[in-house]
Image (cartoon, rainbow, N blue to C red):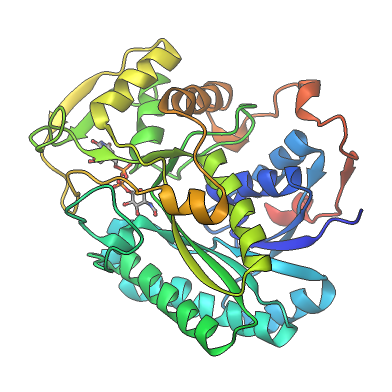
Length: 368
Ligand code: WQD
């Protein structure tokens, strides 16, 4: 059976590359469109090692309508998973126009090109930051938009754009996935998160402390009204998030209209609980220092995860211990991220029932 081709924008990134693994394992053929501004093309070689199918990489900016028209003309794309975008909260405050340009104008250019090509099935990578500093958790999808930074506001604006499009043209099937805190790595240890520079997020920072790359974790505040005074978040395994995209794609392909849904576990974990889980997983001690609260941080939020289960038949299956174990396996095997050579392959990662073929790719030149 030929594999349905799915365009994955931002597919060389952390969530994008894991989503390519899930798409391939679900029988699809991802084509990756990425500028590589914030990602590494070698992640797709790792996808090939894990699945036996290396996605084609198209170096292109979603804002380039003419280039998008060529992509849709050259490839029989059946749907789009749109992850390309800027996602650093602090950076969005400093440079809001970049966030509205890439996230909002980029999505507008993409859906216009999709319309011209007659491709009207879309999964959009949204974020729990559209809820802002939600006062009450678990947070349902019915909670109001209350973003408190340009990043979250750009995501909310895109959701509104897509809702208006779906209302105006019932041929569209759209799913907006509101990620809570994606963490972890593929269980093979071949794929994971490698932030450029000092990690802003908790899990990659803890990983680097465990590896001895960072001296200690600075805990941003221990005086919140939470179980132990530290911030609480809904951490969700990146492979659960990736599989959520496959479920959303199937839903959008069969149901016209638009669906907004959380992708979270429905459970919160504090910073100290994550640290303890990581110490269990790695056998390493994580040195801590308690610092002041980080501006903009909410004390606690986690998802109401019932809607994704009801509408997509999806729920998170991996727990915090597995998130930490998989993060550590990736960190320990790839201390320099994708600069490290691919470890010798374990046959189980090359699925026995998969053809071993590699789509032609320009990966050889993409790092030029
Ligand atoms: C988690 C907790 C920190 C680092 C961010 C983005 C959000 C989304 C997910 C895209 C908080 C504490 C962290 C550290 C710490 N990304 N912490 N020391 O802020 O919940 O969400 O990533 O959609 O948009 O804002 O995640 O991992 O930065 O923080 O104490 O060195 O860990 O205070 O309580 P956050 P995070």
